[in-house]
Length: 225
Image (cartoon, rainbow, N blue to C red):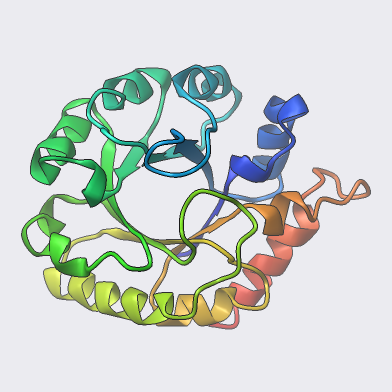
């Protein structure tokens, strides 16, 4: 029912391939891939070549979160590089419905991302075409930020919309997710949890796959829901 999606933004890039192998072998479900362009957000991260390089290392889904503007030009590149899910921000697309169609035409699942202050009305006409809704519980651009509590009310509202639609749509949360709040977030309606520093900064050398303990701790909290 619940999926844990480590964000490689917080991984050790000097040994990224090993980090990805370790975190999946530790029990994580999805690789979350943050793409920032120093335009839509004030940071610059990684592109399709890195996605292509890590694709052979795992059968896990690669969940690409595009924090770029415009988005349409880069979508085919990530699809070709092996992305399974491509999500984008409505503010970064001139035609949201067209971008969703482009993602699906490339053979990927499509997601729409909502910043803390982005209204949910964008869902009114496209929810039936989405495979994932991502609620940001921090302002995008940097890892390690503190969870914004107002995100819970937005999560609850989206959970209601998804349930009323009758569709199977993933509801993902990203930003400040930790062992001490993941259960509350799950109770509010999320089923997929992005965690960056909470996982990659908690690695233990005595764990068989380095991240076994932290992934198990997150799942133990989810088991309480």
